Length: 196
Figure 1: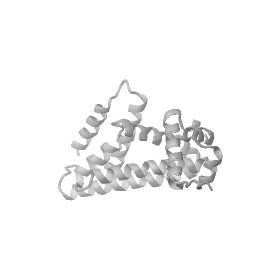
Figure 2 (figure 1 turned 135 degrees about the horizontal axis):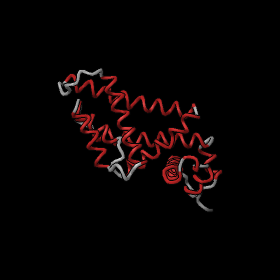
Figure 3 (figure 1 turned 180 degrees about the vertical axis):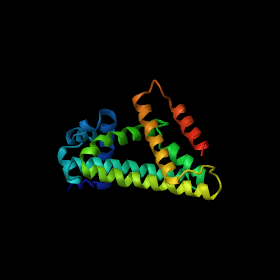
Figure 4 (figure 1 turned 90 degrees about the vertical axis):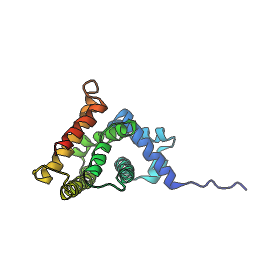
């Protein structure tokens, strides 16, 4: 009697989400159809339907999985540091300074326009961006309490400036690679932080 094949459902979901990320990063979010994702993962559309209710659930899950990987990596980077040192790590980690973070940035940016048309995606974007904003604001508060900041600016305003700087620099690197290099992004961000 043949032994039934044991399927690791969590692993299969991860494979589908990895395939979705690859399709989005390589071909754009509009090209991330269930058919394209299934083909990339080496599965049938039926397998995707078994794990996800629709395309938006796949896309949302891929975005959340990417954000979780970023959070895990950041937790390792800021372990044992606080204030301005932790803020530097957090902000630099959110810039596309290597291949992995460039893919993450491409994925993130791909969702921006789609989120404007989908309240479900926008809610996830707002929630996840809210976590990042809270972390930046908290670290600025730690830095101020430790006497590491000389700026008298409102820390909520500083938080918004820093987040806008990270988003803007990231987008500019993706759109204008002949004008900006990764080393320029790092230099510009650290220059801004030093001004605080």
